[in-house]
Length: 209
Image 1 (tube, rainbow, N blue to C red):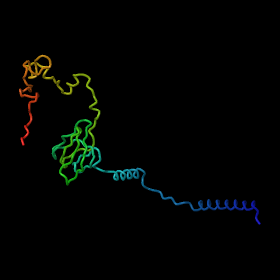
Image 2 (image 1 turned 30 degrees about the vertical axis):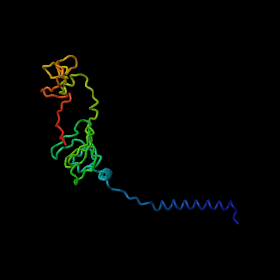
Image 3 (image 1 turned 180 degrees about the vertical axis):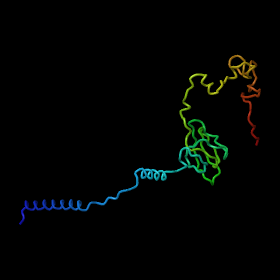
């Protein structure tokens, strides 16, 4: 009978012989390696091209100009046409953008667009627009340093009519902030003498039913 010590020695020798045989097999039969002969820059460029082709969607690329029928719902757009082929008319100020609210397609005639003012407008799907927002959104936060800077931009001063003399404006003259030009009961007039304000109806009259 084998003792416990003899059994452990035999087991250790067997494991060592097994390790040595596996090492010898790896040395005599090395693994075959397949080398890629394609240049590294070609492989990188082809990988980048494949990734771009997988994620390419013209209707979502910022700066793309196309008809509304080719865009998706929820897209931010600017420089919108009012009539096909007329050229951009809407949403052209700095930092502004509009949003498509309904699904545009070639089968529908009009598409609903929400303008920066909050007004919802129906626009022909054949009209073209540019994807994205107009640049320079910080433009509205800029403060003018003096009155002359406003004049440099071509903006002339605006004077209230009540601050003028009667010869300069129909609202001029009187004591204090009076629009009667010194004669009580006179209605407000435009610079061209047309009555305005004071409840004067200037719009078209409603049809009587």
